[in-house]
Picture 1 (cartoon, rainbow, N blue to C red):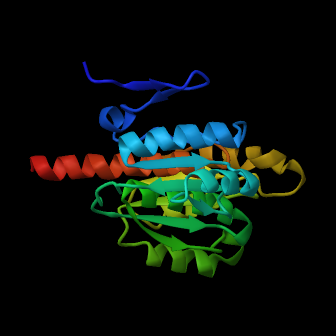
Picture 2: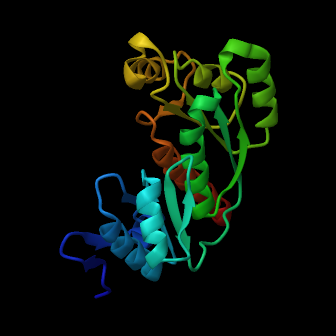
Length: 229
């Protein structure tokens, strides 16, 4: 029977997730030490060819890079990636639209994740509904995309507007950007969940990684359908 985990005592690494689900296991870096991150990422990169850690501080990333020089730190998104043997490129394009500059860390977390998965992206930033003309231009720029990830804080209205203009699946990502009763992103989350535009999928607050994984699985499903046709 093929091995599916590697036991590091402090972590039991799922090395079969890429084969089983089409997505490699990722590492949530915030609570882990640099030594733990280094050990886990080394195993994942060795077994899957690639490795990803999210929510990694710059200090931890520098410590990991001393042990694993191929590790690449994406400072704005706080992601750490390794590509020893890059995953195959997938067909299709995922558009990512961010409402404002403050949402860029989440936009870039989605973009870094998709790039590691072999998915081409098209990013359109600073296109929130406060300047509706920018929103309409963003939708025009994403017209050829197969999926759109829409990232917004404040009142979280952007996914509804983009969804009303595009025929592709929309994955909405609320962010913790906002004042007062924004409640660290809860108001944007509730707006997106209550959207009047049908068919929007909503992930958790600031979860650009989760949105990218959902988009990757949709792209892979489209690919399987095309092969069967």
